[in-house]
Image (cartoon, rainbow, N blue to C red; front, side, top):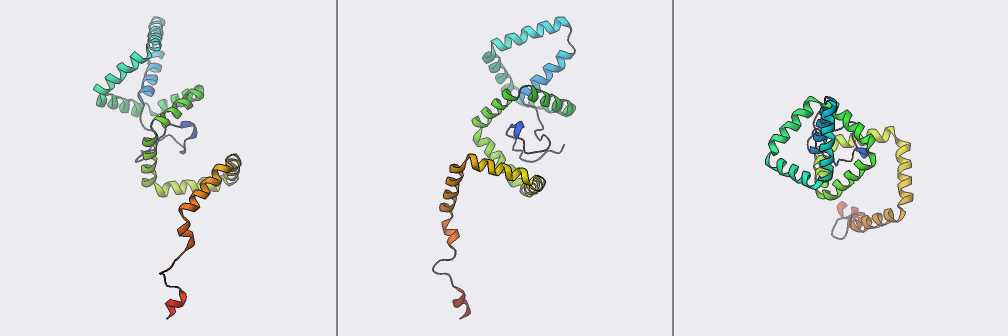
Length: 200
C-alpha cells in the first residue's frame, strides 16, 4: 500500500474517506493488543492463567501502568517506533484483519475513543487535513467527482436529509457567507471603466 504524504488520519475508522486504510503504523495500543494476541495463541494453560492475572493487575492499576508506559516510551521513543514499524511491515495484513475484527466487536468503544482523540487534538487533526488536502488537491477532487457520479441519488438524499435536520444552521451559514462576500457579488464599483468609457 502506497504511503501518502501528510496523511490526515483522524482515527475515525467508521467514517473513513478512503477505500483502504492509509494509517501505515501502529499506535502503542494497537501494538500492545496485537502482541498480546500473538502471545496468547502460543501460551500453555498455566501461562494463560498468569497472563490473566497480569491483565487483572493492569486493569486494577490502570493509571500506574499507563504512567510507566509513557515513561518507557519517552525514554525509548526511537526504539519503540522502530519495533512498531518492523512489526507492522512484517504483519500488515494480519494487523489490518485484527483491527477490523476489534472494531467490529467494540464499535461503540472505538467510536468514543475516536471522538475523544479528535476533541483533544482538534488543531492537530485540522492541520493534518489541511496539509493533506494541499498536497493532494487534484486527487481528492477526482475522488469526489467519481464518488458523486457513482452515488448521485444517495448524495442528493443525504443533502436533503441534512438540510431538513439543520435548516436554521444552514440558513445562518448562508447569511454569514453572503455578508462576508457581499463586495464580490456587487461587481465593479466606482473608478472602474465601463463599456462606454472603453470605447472612447
